[in-house]
Length: 105
Image (cartoon, rainbow, N blue to C red; front, side):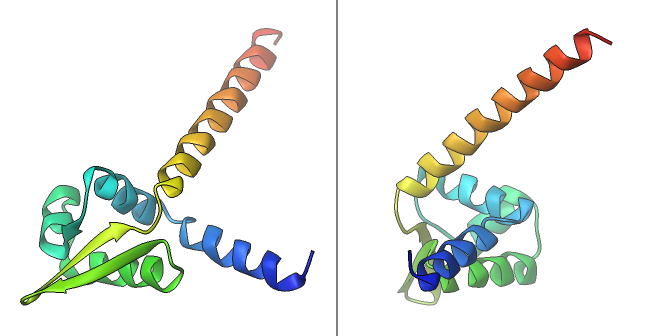
């Protein structure tokens, strides 16, 4: 596979590599929101939300649209939520394996 594909994958996953950005994506799970709505939902300041949305937008994880003076953000592809769900299942499996390993101690 071409190196560019690996670089694109790494950049996409790097954008997901922040707990705060994962919270933003979860908040966007029920539809688009503007920065103020995300600030309220996540109890964060405007600069923190905007900065992290910028990372997500640059990597193509979210899309934006302007309406009047507000910018609304949405997940670019529903497969992003499926990817997070798959990650949750992997983590649950790992937790179960650790639990079983600790039982023998």
